Length: 148
Image 1 (tube, one colour):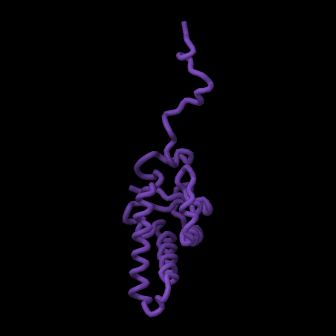
Image 2 (cartoon, helix red, strand yellow):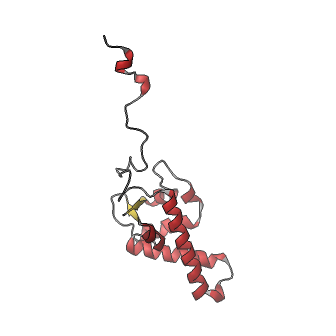
Image 3 (tube, one colour):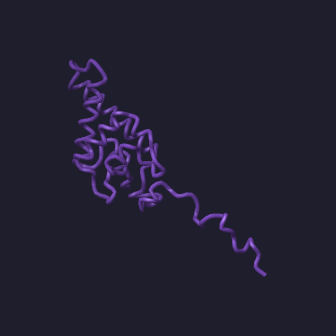
């Protein structure tokens, strides 16, 4: 005889293999190349980019470096140019990440500029969805993925 435990219940919900991984809804793998970049790698990339921007602003713009706005401007220009040309900033390059459109292509200059401007506002990267895409990525339809 078949019991209720053998059949399950509609109260159990749909069967699944565990909690969804970030990027599963986007068709991204759970690990490896093309998977969604995780927070530690993102943080390291941001810190590397910020440190490089501080260094460049100090070395080349020291007489105008009266405020942190010059550092922010260097960060904006550096990140926009690098993501626009290569799809990655120096920090992204170091940790193996790339900014891509949803179909897997590098972001390009327009998206890079808007995305970087939103990163400079600080709050959009802190508000993320279940796929770990911040508001800055959602606004320009991009995703930060691992490439190695």
